[in-house]
Image (tube, rainbow over all chains, first blue to last red; front, side, top):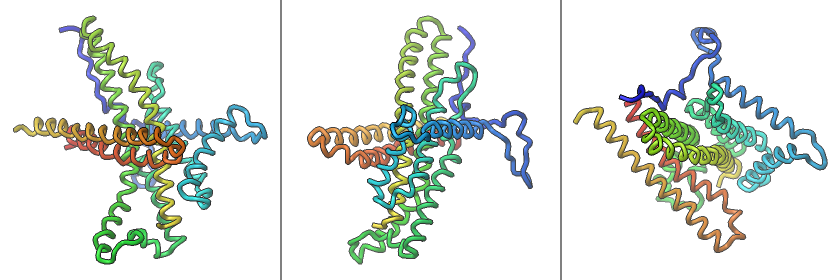
Amino acid sequence: MAAEQAKVDPMYQFTIKPLGGSDEWVLGEGFNIAFTNSAMWMLITTVVLFLFVLGGMRRQLVPGRWQMMVETFTGFIDNMLEANIGKAGRKYVPYVFSLFMFILFANLLGLLPLGVVGVHPFTFTSHFTVTGVLAIISFSIVLLVGFWKHGFHFFSLFVPHGTPLPMIPVIAPIEFISFMVRPFSLALRLFVAMMAGHVLLEVLSSFVIDGTNAGVGFGLLVGLPSFILMIGICALELLVAGIQAYVFALLTALYINDAENLH
Amino acid sequence: MEMEAAKLIGAGLAAIGAGMAAIGVGNVFGSFLESALRNPGAADGQQGRLFIGFAAAELLGLLAFVVAMILIFVA
């Protein structure tokens, strides 16, 4: 037997832990409001996002680098909403921008290699509770806007234009189900994409650790290729972090478009 | 068959779904690139649709991953 087998549990990184002895904090009748690592990384994300946007708020006529960076993001969201919703989309820029940047920063901060110095980043977007709440906020905005603007006419969303009369009993339930599934698919996509990436990195790192522990031969045969693959997967994860934030914002925009313009 | 073995085989079979989603995602980007090279002028305007197609194709693969995870850790 070579070195002691290191047991790497790929799901351990998603454990939610109360920080600083806050696990006894209780609100009212037994609601635990402990300050967890998830909450701490949400706070860090918010502060980083706040500072990032604050740096671009100097409103100079000729923007500096920082302001240019922030304005690129706002312009990007602005364009997306205008392309998908039209003129009425402008008023959703604050919400969709916050949503996009919050998810993007959360995903990217969770990928930071801070484990090297002993601080383990926690990707809270890899939890269904968090992404679920974000999706429910988006979905409620769709419902509120839809019923506010169109009243009960909003239900015509379930009968697309030009549906032949005999087809309506078939089409309407299908459209209804596809409408009700939206918040789930929205939340599930982000959470699973983030979780899958982190599990993959953890599994590959276990190959590196176990391979290297098993001796020089295995280290070169298994550990080294896995390590190189890990670097590649990290780059892929950066891409996925951006794409998932973009897809979340884009689908929110499309759903708001349904509520704003029906079809 | 033992329950544990059946679960692991099921989780392995769910990986087929992930592979199929890979075909789907490749198809989405491949078709986009193919037509974008024919008409580069229209390509930028279709990027939103590209990512919607990508998201739809990817979601089904992620569902396969969820099934595998549920089989291993929950069921």
